[in-house]
Image (tube, rainbow, N blue to C red; front, side):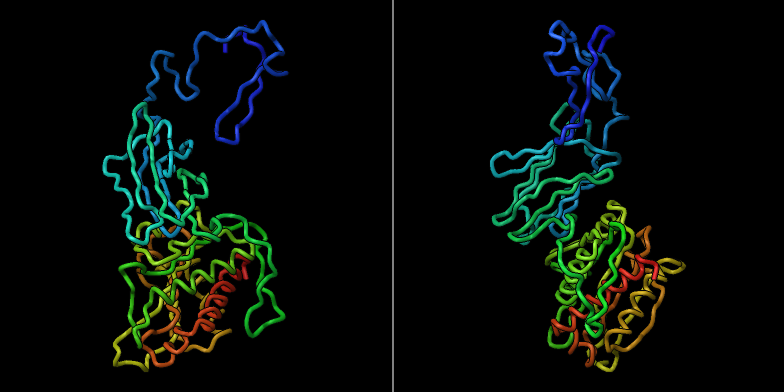
Length: 366
């Protein structure tokens, strides 16, 4: 605006832009002239040069598909617009480029997307086109720090990051008069059901698969925590392959307060005598060790399971995360005692409730 322009008022549009209007509305100063040229708010180049300097472009570094969410990660905050083109949902990111070695997510038969296209469309713009499978709805994009997440939901599902539903606080089995503690502020927790898809994890007595057991427990932990005011992200919500680095990067992107990976143990089928709970933290991680001990002791005080201790280990997901992290081995699929419990839905629910209570105790400083 030049010095002769009228006073202007600015407001932020709910669509992500900025609206400038003369104070009092367009008719407030009918003699006000329109400027002869416009200048980008993001560059200091002349009006004839609309190219954003390379140093100011956001670089799209990763596009990950995990659970029911598509994550688009950059090296700085990104600004985008969305629209439907037929059955395809498009995200247009301005002042952006793709990293040279970007690899898009792999889409399997169980993926919520049937197709995804990523391209640089000129004028420093990146367009991502996602086509959902039949029965999957795209519930819109949400902005995170240096990232955008797209929620891909089946009928009846709600976005994981939405406010928890209003419902009574669940009581823990064995202590029906004591509700779980509710966190006083909205903290973020990442729950990581191990393995998934073509990687079933351990196979136990009777063919019980680790992936099925831990997904069931992880989903229940998520439901309980959300009812208590915690924002929960799951690394997967169904049977799909998720590599280890994306599990860690999810926790980093959402600035999680803690990370809990859920597994089920196994050893030789010839050792059904080995049973019990093991909980791990990264070596030397003080807060991780405290988190592991809190969850471990909560499980032991509420379920009948042998105690095999809290230990340090260099598992990738707890070693590479920057927040307190733990890996819970909920029992041995090859153990004659544990397998009876692990294939029992009611017992798995009790395990989930114990893990959730341990997490809530940690968040509340107990």
